[in-house]
Image (cartoon, rainbow, N blue to C red; front, side, top):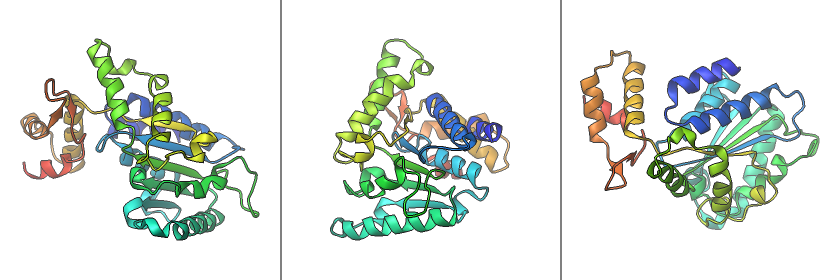
Length: 273
C-alpha cells in the first residue's frame, strides 16, 4: 500500500511536498491501524489546479482498485447534489441516508466532497455523528471509512505564506505543516464561504488533517505538461513543453511566480500542439 501510494504521488503530483507527506502518512497509518477510533477525515485546501482532485483520485484508487468508478467511492459535488439553499433540510436527511447505506454495504467506503466552498453553511454538520469517536451508530461502525473534503477556501492564506517565504529568500520546501495548518483551520472556520463556517467538525477537532496545496510555479507547470504528454504515449518535446507553459498566466503581476490556474488547463492546451 505504502509503496504504491508513494509511487503514484511521486509520479503524478508536482510541487506539493506538504500534501504528499501528509497524505502518505495519514492514509497508510489509517489503513494499517487494526482498530481506528474514528474515520479518517482530510480537508484539502488550495487554488484550482494545484492537485486536490488528483490526490483524492489517487487515494480512492489505492483503497479501491476501480477508484472513482468503484461503487464504494462516492463523489459529491456541491453545485450538482446540493444546489438549492431552501432544501437544506432535505439534503441533510439524504446525506445521512446515503452515508449510512453505503457504509453498511462497505465499511471502507470513501466519500469525497468537492466544491466545499460552494456548500451551504451548516449542511456538512449533518455528517458529524459519522465522523465522531463512536464505536457504532445503530449497529453500524463508521471507523474504517474515509472522508475527504476539497476546497478552494484558504487558497489566499496559503498563497500569502508561500509568497512570504519566497520574499524572504527561503525555499518553498522549507514550508512546514505547522506554518499553515493553524492558519488554515481558523481561516476556514471563520470564512462564510468555506462550507465549514463555524462548523462543529472543526470545533470538535473531527478533521484529522488540513492539507495545504501550494500555488504552482513555472517549473511545476512544465512538470505537469511533460506528464500529460507522456500519459498520451508521446515522446516529450521540450519546445512543445515551453510553448504550452508560455500560454499560462502567472501572478502576482509584478513578479509572475505562480500559475493562475495551477495545472488545470494543461490538458486542453496540450491539445493545441
